[in-house]
Image 1 (spheres, one colour):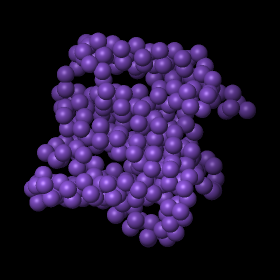
Image 2 (cartoon, rainbow, N blue to C red):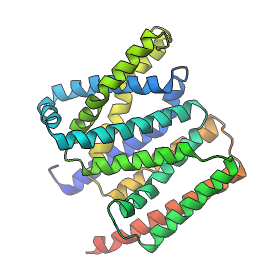
Image 3 (tube, helix red, strand yellow):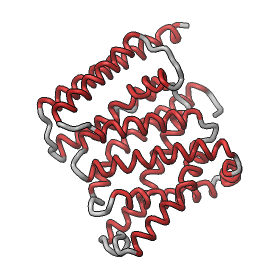
Image 4 (cartoon, one colour):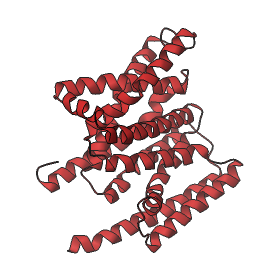
Length: 300
């Protein structure tokens, strides 16, 4: 990272905002591929993402950096783990969207900032301030109310929040740049993804040759469509404060929430509304705490 810090922070904020807006609109894209098994969709995403990333790296002379990362055992371990977390996150997300749970997927991403606070306490041993504890308390109350209202554990929301929170933590610690890191993640998982696609085609359940022309294009384009926001996310995360990143990431679940209610007309009962309200209260406290914590720094 080089150049004027203010300019770099501005570029990082724009990149992160663009990433979250794209993620918020993704349910529209995945709904068009609802006839394809979610696991196969994610496998195609990996394969075509790698093709796109390698093409970009070749054009920017970044393949040498990827080669060095492949020979680094530490980078291999970190990015294999982050790649698995991202794969699980996308698998749960796509399955949830295509099975009528857009609202619950939005809830998962609303919970991510509060999961980040909890990870800071549990993993990094950070001391939590009073408002942060209170924010986590509201989130726990909201999830509990949702559990009572749904009669089941909101596993989609909790899985999305946990996997993406851990992914963000690993990418923040990674010494690799956004493009090299994404390239290494997709490269490590490429054999499994390609093997699954070949097996699906061999057994007659594969999407290639079975879906329409438009869906073929969308399958192949899934690599570009999902890789670009990830690059924007990694670019932004390395240039802006976590507090700023935490505020911007409300964009994606807000857009998803609006899609679930207004476009897909998913049921929004009183219990679900109350649960969301409690979690939004927790987010408001989290935001207020971040702003208050930044005041002394700004004055200094």
